[in-house]
Image 1 (cartoon, helix red, strand yellow):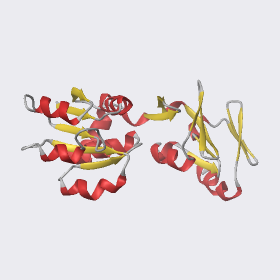
Image 2 (spheres, helix red, strand yellow; image 1 turned 60 degrees about the vertical axis):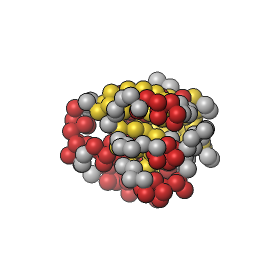
Image 3 (tube, one colour; image 1 turned 90 degrees about the vertical axis):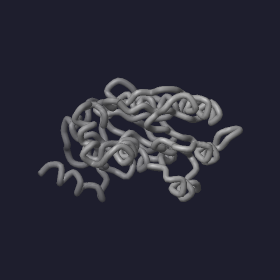
Image 4 (cartoon, helix red, strand yellow; image 1 turned 90 degrees about the horizontal axis):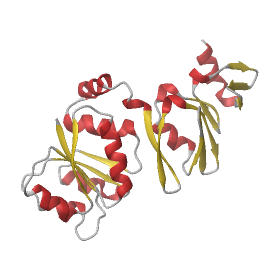
Length: 231
C-alpha cells in the first residue's frame, strides 16, 4: 500500500489528485494538508511514502518546506508555475506536474516515482477504467468524464464543447490541449474544429460523419485520417 499526502491550499486540487489516486490500486490517502505547516506537524508523528506538493502556498512555500524535512519521502510537485521546474529537480523531486494535468500524465508520474513502465501497465491491468476518465473545468467547477461516453469535441475559439452520450459541457480550453489529455487511440481529428470518437460513428458519407443525430464535417486536410480509419 502506497501511503500518500496531499499538500495544496486549493481544495479542488485535493479532489482531482484523490480522484486520480482512487482509480489506482494500493493508493491510500493519509491526510489532506492545506498548508505546509499542517503537513510538517503531521510528518513529525507519521510516515508516508509519497507527497503531492504544491509550491505557491501561504506562510511556507513548497521548496522551503522540503528543506525542513530530514528524510523526505518521494515527492511529486503539482503547480501552475513551470518556472520552478529546474529548481525542483535540484531538490530531488520525482516528477513535476504542471496544472492542469490529465490522468495519463498523472499515471506516468506515479509510474516514474514508484517503479517503471512495467508497473504502469500493471496498474492499468488491475483497473481497466483508469485511462477512461478525465477531469475538465467549467467555470470554477470540475467535472469527471468517462472518455468512453464522449461522442465528439468541437472547438469554438478559446473554448471547447464536449458532447457526450448524456450531456454537453463547454470548457475554456483549446481543442489541441484537450486532445493531449484524451487517450490518443480513442479520438480522431477530422476537421480543424472537430475530433470524434470513431467507435461512435454511425456512418460516413461524402464530407460528413454522422454520430447519433449529430453531423460532423470532414476537413480537406483531414481526409487522410478518415481514409486510414476505413482501411
